[in-house]
Image (cartoon, rainbow, N blue to C red; front, side, top):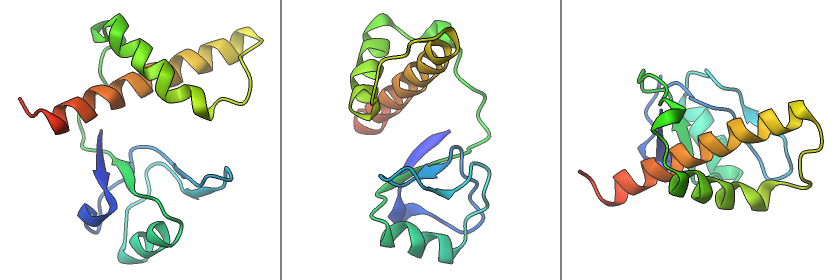
Length: 114
């Protein structure tokens, strides 16, 4: 998985996660094969970047530092309308935190290529 700016989309890239508008509407589902039409739609909705499926294996959650997990929580906080109250909600929240932490790590790699 890799986050890329809309300007770098090429046809037949595959979405690694769904694209969701600010109002919660799913614009494109995970797994969609992108076309020029999709790029126009994303620009129209003001989407600046997407996550594409690069064929890489998922990152082992054990590899995420506590610092990255905390950054993931901070990244996710503005999107949360309420705190999780039930076990299933807590589990979903933790999955989202790990994914946000992975995105933070990918951002670091894009800014400071190693």
